[in-house]
Length: 174
Image (tube, rainbow, N blue to C red; front, side, top):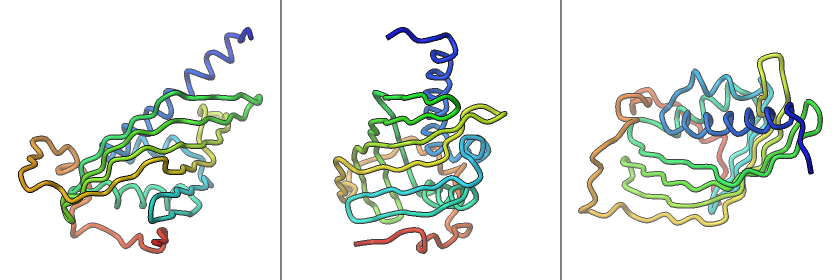
């Protein structure tokens, strides 16, 4: 199939947007995060023993800020995008690989998931209007006593314990 220059540009813009998303959550860059979603974004994440579901950009920013806080270490990578364009709308599937260390409860989560995004072209470029994932693998283990964290980027950039908000109303635990 031959793609137009506009389609090739759209593919690259969508890939760049998702890469900014992963970087923004791992670095608590809420300013950039705000630019990636529509105001009415819908979110649903289905994990091993949790389900997160809500709507709205402000709730999403609060959720991310309180999840990727000063006692966290995170790495998210999105691989192998499958992007389908429908004019000013698009759908994308991404393979997620992630590590999340919670120093407060001394656990390490390693996993993968399939992200399913719906996007719309706005006057400011492509934005995600719906994002979901289903976990493929998720392991949660105690952090080893001899494991040393020598760099913790979020320590100075994420919310401190005294600044955290209660986001339990956004998460259902099984």
